[in-house]
Length: 342
Image (cartoon, rainbow, N blue to C red; front, side, top):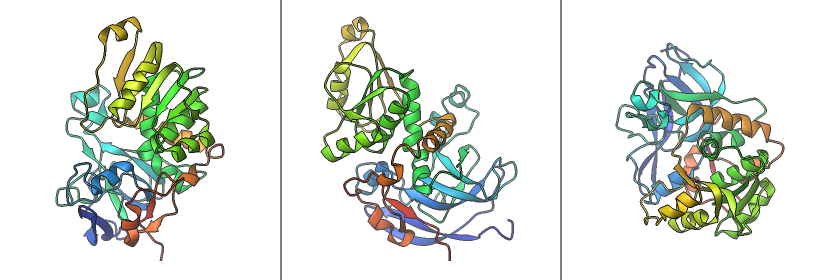
């Protein structure tokens, strides 16, 4: 290992429930393709809140966190990113060789591993971003961040924004189309902005009036209940999905992205699907191209939409417990600043 590469780092290890322990963790020798990143800022995705509150199963103990931005400080042989580059990275790590990877579904790789989801006592302890450093193995998509993009705006690209780019790709051309967005969380808000940026009429439904009002600052409007050409659901609610399906006009497309936990079955009338010429599709995670598009979209719209306003000021790693809670009104992401310059 290079003498300038850190040998140890501090990490917040999730131990179950709301338990978090700060631990010193040895940084292993980097092998071919490895990239070591010093984490500048990590935002707290809703899925991590579900983990610590028991709504989502996860490896335990583990280092959580999969939305982050950081600086490359070391790299193994054959790594394709340069030292010193500020980057974001994908949630999924793919083998690149299995039939799914070769057919373009690397997010569903047969041996997929996931940033912020791996067991701490396994072969990849430093997998999460709630740490001063994260180790990114070969197969992790990495995207450079422009100097013009603040950390708080760049970090969500790694999950929320890239996932939205994948759902919009599944929805097809959006210019001039009526689009219904289900859910006004970080994904829904980003989808609203992306749809408006693409020239669509973005309507939103959400049970939270404050979040719904927030979408008007990002190019959207509350739904008027009329027919739509595209519906994208981030809520995961069977009732919301059914309502969106009923709103589709002839040739309509329904994209499901929020249904990531078991729930009630959705009754579908096949005749309606046939006669209305409807398409129903699902999106889970994203491909490397979507991460690149996410960074480009955020940079292009950095002055058009108030992205930083929906991310809370970061807390230090020692105070991470305060960030692993639902954000206050008007904020969609809490944040942690793991590495503190001395």
